[in-house]
Amino acid sequence: MQVTTTTSAATTGATSSQKAQLQKAAQQFEAVFLRQMIGAMRSASLAEGITDSSATQQFQDMADARTADAMAGKGAMGIAELLMKQFGARVSDTPVATDGTRATGA
Image (cartoon, rainbow, N blue to C red; front, side, top):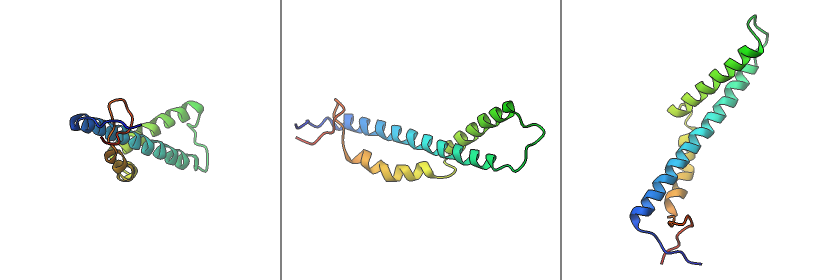
């Protein structure tokens, strides 16, 4: 089945929307990776402190998540940038028709 191509403005809009979605997903992936890394570093503690409790651990987890999100938002590790380089070309190479299917040309 052949799908007709859309106008260039619609295709450009769909491509920029897909790039924005890819950028958001890449930043979220970097944040998840950083959360895991920070959690692993925190669990490497050798002894319990005087203030260690489940409430303290919960607040530390929340603070670690915020720190990871902030680092990912700034691109501190560059993981999101690398994902954009790898997958960004795939998004811009294939235009999308208005019904969401890949356009193959007329």
